[in-house]
Length: 258
Image 1 (cartoon, helix red, strand yellow):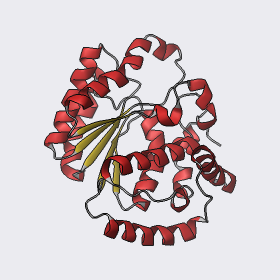
Image 2: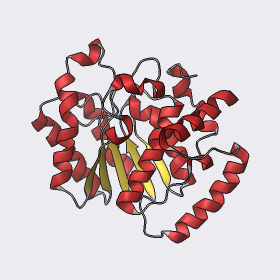
Image 3: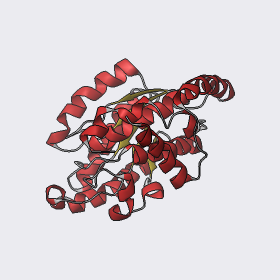
């Protein structure tokens, strides 16, 4: 990935969230190592120690930044986010339900974060049933569940027929979280993205749906702060992870990100 692209990723994070600028990736690595040790010593009971990330292709584009941020903060990270799927509602969710128990058993996360997908179609009752099943599966494996609202995105011809379900999903997720407040939490990402897809285009790829490196880094920074609020997690500063090899991941090239 060109130096310009790497620099842009951090510039965008500092611009959106008022953060300080970065150092080069070599010094970042050394700094990250010492910071991770200090964080582990300071917050021995904080979660997550092992974060499992779930979602669709939007989540897949956010995963490289999340992974870099979690690693710099001393937490292990795994992603199940899947292009063309990743949801927990309806027939399209079958691969998720097949893979999730295996991932929970092998990775053993203490926190699972599920970003509502663009495929969470169905009635509110069907949505609640899917999120209830997810909560039970994750909680039974000994992990907490975070239900995260998706960023607003352009509703093209493919999604237009499901506009009502897409709009209803965050409320359905919030209702499930309210029922299981000890082990399930709803995170409203509109505090980062807002609700207008057109206003968020600077952080998106040309398709108006997925995040480029800048948006993914901004999301990972926001997410780390949410973990701090709910779990006492100490996120590493973006200057320790927002540049580096993750910005050159194949997913960004496929999205036409600069």
